[in-house]
Image (cartoon, rainbow, N blue to C red; front, side, top):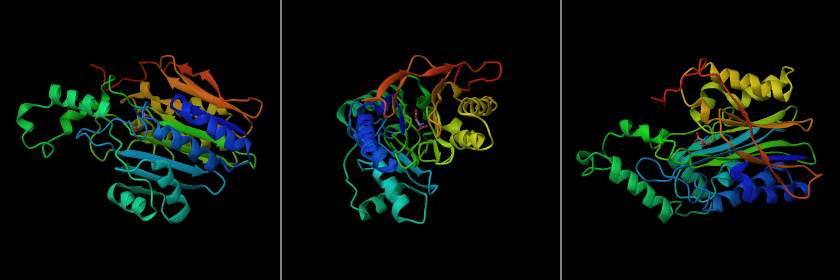
Length: 317
Ligand code: ASP
């Protein structure tokens, strides 16, 4: 058994570890932990309390994968529901589909009786209003939000605006290797933008024969290079966990443009190894548990430098 979550998983990881210790399926343990993160308003990038998109609406993404059945469930750009991870899980359990978005995902959420609720909290609304007052040109205010938005997207890459995700990777006592994600995505994103967190193969992937990977940071990068699937596929073709993660980072460096310095990979293998690696990052931590530990431990994320010669960030002046 093993559990790895990113730093945002702090409030939920003990619940997941207890679930695993009690013999629960890894998907159940992951879902129960992520629900706690989604509830915690102090986590500004997941669930209630998350940052809104450009028009001030919180749109949430989440995904889960069962590495034994290789089934996934995900929802994207869903509004007005408190626990996207549970809706994603029910996509896996009840539908012949893997991903629902927008109004269709909301319809399904109502149909299964998912908890509805407002995810925009006052503090965060005030922060969006400050941005609106400072940045939205006067001539667009009268007809807001039915105005061109594309040029305002530059603010979605503003490093001052929070963005993150919670990612959970776990192997249970029966050897089921699973992954789960949940996020409000980038603050000030274009409405309808999906990051990698609901995209199987980009933001998360799990295979009970080899291991699992989930990513945080600029989802655009891991979508472009299929990062989570790549890590697991490289292990399938003989790489060890270290080599697999390094190879997936090299794949991303080959993209040349984009926000590579905003990506962190979390990965586990079925032999008990794990890595949490931030590309060109600053100090950060993740949470780790296995049955030798009474409680999950906070550990330091590894940082790898990807050469600026092989990578130019489009976001930098
Ligand atoms: N990966 C998330 C996204 O692209 C955000 C993040 O983890 O920073 O929506």
